Image (cartoon, rainbow, N blue to C red; front, side, top):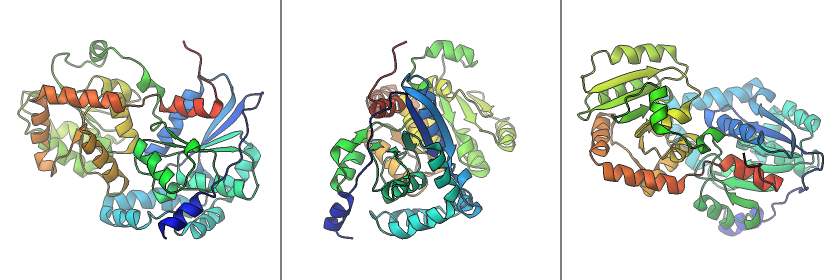
Length: 399
């Protein structure tokens, strides 16, 4: 498609716009459990909404619960299989499909066929404001607005640095994007400037609270004097996580290494077993799923993980420099490139050189401090509040 055609098609974008109702706004948040980021963004918005008096009700649903089994298999299980077993194929598809409006008519038709229960839910719920943190949901809402099947204020919240073509829809009131470059991209393809806000990616309100690092280290039973390296082991899978753990055992600098294993009990056991013979200057600790990620990030000095949109936003809010490992081709590679460009992350050429990168940063406290300072400049911990403030035209009361 030529750039002129793209401009013309995008510029026809319209929305059904209404002022917040006097009875209070009824908000419906639509996410999808194809990867945890979309759901976590929805949960962040749901949590932030509790601070706003101008809301009558908030409901957060996973749209894959309102679609066919085939759709759920495609968007959840197939996605996980592709990124874990055939990442290069996923990257190829991601790049190939990133052309504004290409194949949109067929895609939306297939989604409508598979998502009739969601369409009925939207009619029944009749929300004043619909906030979508996944493109599948925004496609359906946009279609229903276009055909006057519902009347709602439609907001799209992009949860990665790049606005992939799948995120584009015609009927909307507002787009919320992570960066100035994301906003520039939308403007260049014809989206109205007054319907785009650079909000950042919504993360849980806990990340916007000030925290006492010394008190938290005491609470979490962490040595207050030594550096803490946080490893998001649960996001890599069993084999990759154990390889990373064994590599870190070759570090020369003393450190406390905390491996977050999520809900994978087998991984938790394997990490504990693999670190039994760790050298004396390295203290390893394996943790199961924790709801206190904001606290662990607040007390850490380095974070080793994958550059998902929510993860990098949480790390920035915590001023926690990252070592990026095994980014998924496509969206995570773009997220990683952005962080490397901003100077807030490093990336080893191979997991074998992971301990070299960690040692390098721990030996350069001025460089590490500079990375932390830049992260503070880039951080948008109040993104969820910004989105709701923009849509509601009001701010939560100061407490």
